Length: 166
Image (tube, rainbow, N blue to C red):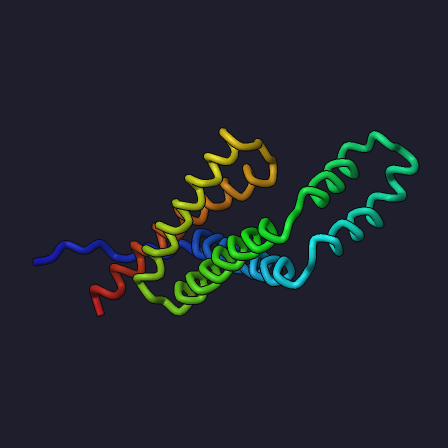
């Protein structure tokens, strides 16, 4: 006799899970679009855009931190770094999109894969936060990823029970 407890209904967790998935999908879509743009745009175009974007601000305040940072970043871009950045964004973006779609389709393997891939992203993000450069945006993304891992594991457990009962 198998002792199986009934699957609990958790509408708030389910809603949070789906919102998290849609945010992850949006993140993947933006990364994919960014990767495509990096393949299309040339470094000199980025430099011209950065110059135009920051020209007004720097004329008012030549020491503006954000404007100087934008210019510095744009001027250090090379063709090779754009391709590397594009490949990075495309691989992450497409992987996230595929996993989210497959989870929404209810494939059990996709839940495990999403948990593993997101955990690997978290490890890399923590490395970047501690060793490379601290960033509030990366902290928020890492927190979102921890939430996604938690919610996905909860949903996976529910779906695993449903599949085993079927």
